[in-house]
Length: 383
Image 1 (spheres, helix red, strand yellow):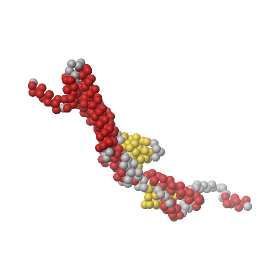
Image 2 (cartoon, one colour):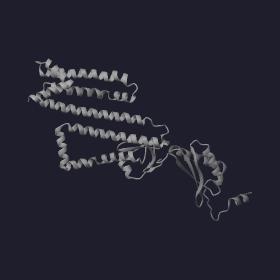
Image 3 (cartoon, rainbow, N blue to C red):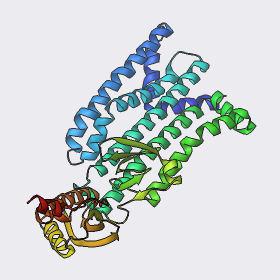
């Protein structure tokens, strides 16, 4: 018994916060227990305010000027730091408060859970700051930079997954503080009853999308700003979260696709290896069109445009139909957006050229009516 008392006394002496709290409690001997507890709480609040002011207002100005990342973390966790200091100090004075053993145990459990929750919030903020810093270094020509798109994809997915894992771990650690909740969770998992089965089935879509997000971060079948075609919709990968992908369609609409569905269904990725694309333009023209003249004009048009990447320019006859032939032009561009604009530009300029130089070679319908006089004969008879 004497040994346990001496051990407790040693622990109070080793803990400076608890030592000061016991000193205050002894100084207020004879006061009502409620007033002693109130005095200790006020002392904790005043000490928290002073320490928080010193850590946030004084230290960053002197030590963090050359460390902007840590300074940003201190600013973002300003409120969290205040509560962390308060929880630590309050946990130190609980043993000196004139309350029963059960009351002290409950208070310490609550403070432990609060401390874990605050640490989890700080981890989430730190992850957000670090990943935002990495994503802010994206170059302006990200569509043409495969490495930049790969890194942006990894950081976006890892940020979302890290947030989810941090929240799950924080909640689990907080619940483990309370023995009643911990025992209930262990008994629920051990029983493997209907409730556990329902929870598992309900969580399967979330877990499957979360696992799909990790798979995308590693294998990268698509990246941020990749040009894709999903269910007939053409657009760019704008954002990759832990559960879904946001596709920016050409008309500025947004299509949200679950990750698990996207990995289970085929889609087109036009910029998988690099951002360069070959665009095609088709025309239906009459058989009398001089193809060589059109080929020279196409070469002139693409050389006058900044949208052309300087690699591919081809004009071919791809179909010979009963009344028309089909011409196909292939032109290369640096990315999907420029490829679309270049296709429209080539199509427009070639039509203007044919209208001006070869209007008779534009598509026409020939109709022959049996038994009717030819138009030239009718004109000669009139004369």
